[in-house]
Length: 116
Image 1 (spheres, rainbow, N blue to C red):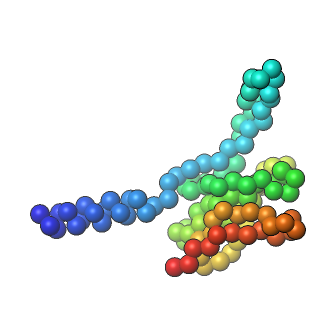
Image 2 (tube, rainbow, N blue to C red):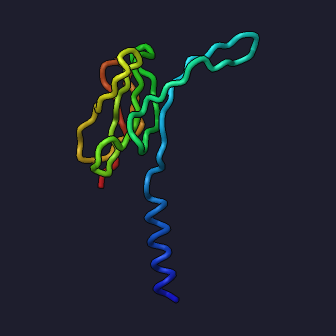
Image 3 (cartoon, one colour):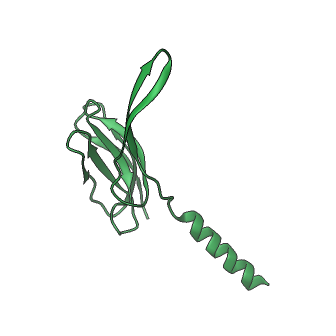
């Protein structure tokens, strides 16, 4: 009985420790007479997996977001350009990064890093 419970707890914790699969979308909206109308919707995350914590930057021309885009089991900061519709990885580290935010000078960004 003890071995069964321990195995169940291990599997349960393993499942809870995985990041959820999420996708990011951007939409054009129209607000008229207090009504919101969604005009167009576009998926901006390019892979199946964790894509979350979007942040509009550079006069709303880009979106920074957290993604597990690589197969290294870590999250990284990516940028999606609204005009070119291209995504690129911005951070290249050995740790996971989350919550990108532009710092006041508008030239660099900060992240929350998870040390192992």
